[in-house]
Amino acid sequence: MTTPTPENGPAAGTDAGFVVTERDMLGALEILQRADADPDVLLVLSDEEILALDGADALRALGSPYLDQEHVHRETAGATAMRGLIARRLVNPTDQAREDEGELLVGEGDPADRLIQLERGLAGVLTLRRIPEGMLVLDRLASELRTRLGLYFFPDGGVLEEFVAADGFHHFCTPTRESLPARLAAFVDAHEVADRDGEVEEIGAREVTELEGLEDTRALTTLTAVGDDGARRASVFVLSDRVRVVDNGAEDPAELPADAALAISDVSPEGLQQVIASLLPPEPEAAGLG
Image (cartoon, rainbow, N blue to C red):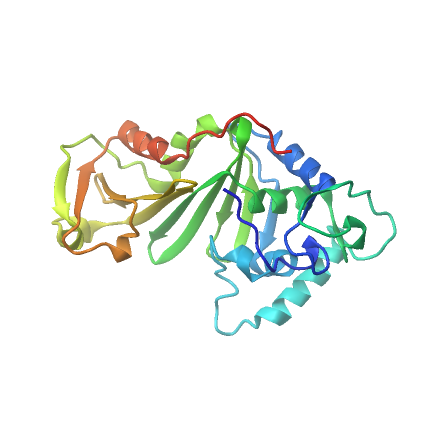
């Protein structure tokens, strides 16, 4: 699965649209090689910086909490963000001290005609955001505070993680694929209240919000796995004393027919990790990014 953005801004070139050069791919590979079970944050970008670098389409999957505020003028914020990126030397708008972009791997045009050149690590992160083989998005609402976590999957076990905080800052790191079930379970069930596995019950979609005890929900996370074979979804309700999981199948929970049959059950810490592991896209064949 690739997710090119048709109008992803000056970082992509002039009017050539979505392009990837050898230098971009080298930066992407260098980022993935830093994978760790407990990774450090490699880069933090704001909503407006991503807007300036990659266009509005690049913010659709995980949202833009800061830019979505009524008082924020998106165009002005993007222009100001670009100036900041230039000041931090993450963006080079001149022809001086540029590295060779190499051959064009994706798209059309001459890489030498790019209006700006990004620092290689930044170019690598943006490239990875554009070309995943699959994705898993976690949308968590707790105490009226919404945060999102996006996982981008690549061959050879490569993973890029993007955490979007409520203030509109996007934190990037590279966890190992093996660490994800436990890592994501900690995001979903931050207070570790998952207790034990329960019997699987079948209920109608309309009945979910009417289930006894769900008014005690402290956090609700929707997990959406996206790959070449479509999407799969699950909803995790974290109560004060247990965790309940609803299998939404391939449908968006908001669009399910009222008479759709869903499976719901309590889960243990191990059961929650198993649910998350089942949503991870199949590992792509080891063909490399190039």
